[in-house]
Each structure stands twice: as C-alpha cells, then as structure tokens.
Image 1 (cartoon, rainbow over the protein chains, first blue to last red):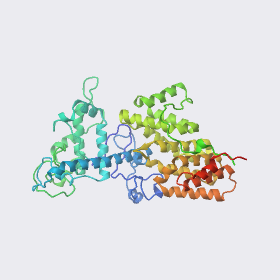
Image 2 (cartoon, helix red, strand yellow):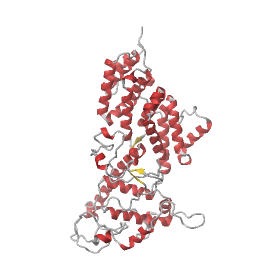
Image 3 (cartoon, one colour):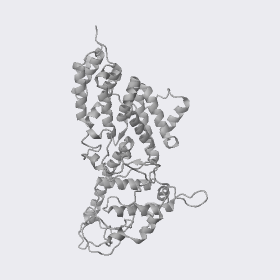
Image 4 (cartoon, chains in turn green, cyan):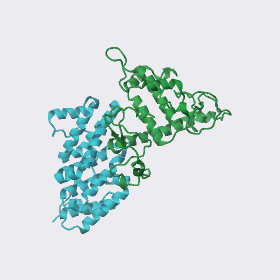
Length: 261
Length: 234
C-alpha cells in the first residue's frame, strides 16, 4: 500500500493521518479534549509501537507523523476547513432534498445508474475525518496551474462527461480505494491542461506520476468495503468519474484486488 | 490614589476608517515592503514580512498593539487575491516558536516578554476565523496570562499592567472560549491581591479593578468606574 500523500504546494512537510483528531501537542497531556472539542483517547499508548516519522516523497527527510497538526498554522487551517466543510455539507443536503422533494419515489429496482436523487441522502458521507481528508485531496488538485487553466478554458456548462475532468463528489459514499482512484484519475486528466514549457512540451510541474498506477487503472476495478444495500451483482462498473450513481461492482478475488494501488 | 490612564484600560474600538498604520519606526525600504504587502500580498515575500512584523512587535509595545490590525489586513488581502494562507501560516508558526521560548525571553527581558504577550493577544483579538477567535491560540494565551499572574510576575508593575490591559481587551472572549481556565486565572489573581506581600499600591489597585471588572460581567458599574477613573480631588 502506498505511503504517498497528496502533494502540497506551500509546505514540504506532510503527515499521514487517518483521523482529524488533533495529535499530541504541547498541552495535550493535560487536556481531556482535543483542539476540536472531541474527547481524546489515550493516543500515546496507541502510537507507541508505530513509526514516529516517515520519509515521504514530498519531504526532504523524515517527517514527524504529527508535525502537521501540532503547529498553529495547520491547526487554524484545519479548523477553518472543518467549518467550511460543515457549511458545505448543510448546503449539499439542502440541495439534494430540494431536488428530491417534488418527485420523491422509491424505485423498486435499485439497479438504475442514472442520477437518482432519492438515493443521495442514503449514501451521504458525513464522517468528518473522511470529508476533511477528501477535501484536502481536492484542494491539492485545484491548487494547480492545470486546474486554473482548465476552468478558464472550459466553462461548466460546456463540459462533456468522459472528456472533461470532473471533481469527485466528496459527499458520496465510496470506499477508500475507490475514492483514491477517482482522485488519481481526475488529476491525471487535469494534466492535459498543464502549462507548456518553453521548449513546447508539456511538463508535469506538480507531481511525478508513477506509471504503474495508470496501468493498474485499466486492469482492476475497486471494490466497495462497506456493506451497502446489497444489490444484485449487476455487472455495472464503478464509474471512476463519479458522474453516475456509484456502487455496483464485481467482486474481485482478494489476490487480484490487492495488486491495485 | 493614582489615576488609571483611561485610554489604556478601556477596551479599544477598532479604528478602521483610516489606513494610517504606524510605520514610522521602520526604514523607508521596509515601509515600502509593508505597504505593498497590504495591497498586493502575492508580490512580496510574505514569510519575510511576517518576520519583520513579529520582530518589531517584540521590541515596540506601541507597535505590537497596532500589529494585529496590520496582520488582519494582510491575511484578508492574501485570501482575496490568491486564496492563500502563507502569511497567516508563517505568522502563527513564528508566534508558536516564540511561545516555546517565552520563559527564556522573560528571563532575558521583561519588556520583550510583555511585548510578546501584547502581540499574541492582539492577534487573538483581530485575526478571527469565521468571526470566531482562533481556537489554537486559546490555551497559549491563557498560559501567558497564568504566567503573568504568578507571584514573581505580580511583583513587576510592567507585567501586571500588561495582564490587566489584555484582560480588558480580550477577557470576555477568552472566557467564552474556556471559562474553566478563566476561573483558575482569577483564583490566582484573588490570592495575589489578598495574600501576596510586597505588592505596590498600584499593583493592588490594578488587581482590584480587574477583579471587579470581571465580577461585573466584563464591565464596571458606574460607581466603580467613578472610583477608579475619575479625578479624585484632594
């Protein structure tokens, strides 16, 4: 499994985190609650047996796993992001309920792949940690010259599905691998808008792509980790662009699946 | 009984009508840099700018009261111009480094320590995120206040003065963010006022006033106001 973390423009350090709960800080040993108000478990014990630092591709040397959370700059940014997320979530909820309202009808078969708003509320991702991580990944992708050029060149209403990259919807339920895959594909597609270099060839300024990842995309399909409404295996493929309703994929055997990513 | 300077002790109203910042203490090149940072932040080295501002705030107490407003303007300008956070991030991390070394700073120079506290409280006051004070600063600010309330600090009028001034300005916000620590702080202040020997009368006056101020819900009753702030004829 890759230890690669999303590229970051302004900061060379990065840390690998599964949760948004603040890591140990100067004052954490005497506080019952983390900076975001949530109760702290005894994280010191939990973290004892693990590496305290990794060398990630983006950093120049070993980086503390908790470096990002214990500096004030990051704490404030995370806090801000969290508030923005909550606001976005409420907005999204209102939007899907509004679209839902007048035409609310439970379809008998759940095999539809068209946009099906009545299903949106059921498959809404609300875990803050997940949303925060996804938002960060999206921000990294949007904080690129390629994205800037893309949105200026192609207005939203002129976007064609399949050809033009579309930002994955962070509020939909996807498995971790599925989501990471969508992000990768999205960013690969965005590279088509990289600014040309002086000698006329397009160069990837932001992130060195591992071609192995691109090759993998062709061969294997991500599986869903969580139990959803167990639909019949309809053989409909996961839509990596996120343009259709997510979900029904073929179950892969474990060996093949573990080769992906 | 000496009179407390009213302009110092009362909470200041935010003057944002004029763009006059006190840049006179800087050399012309630096002044130019700062003025550019306010208008066109992405064209300057924001890390350098944040260091200049912090360095000056640690020397000049008058500037450290002003600095919060300047920083706020730059943060807003950068966010608007390039959706960036470089200045704020550098500022906060520099503040954090100074915070780690605060005991050394205090040992070296009470004045610099007091300037630091004034500055961090100023930042807490001005740099809001979604109109809320930055949560990351709440505990550090309290730590500074608690330090100022220690017996050795209460002996210095300079430190007591700083303590009560900051509590006037941001006490209410601090309490809202964490009332338990405010209670703890005021236990210390009460004890200091009642029990500590060798405090000057000025110090005791300042402490009594802040005790009454908080007890009154972060304001003084009119009679208390008269007591502390009116001219007393001999």
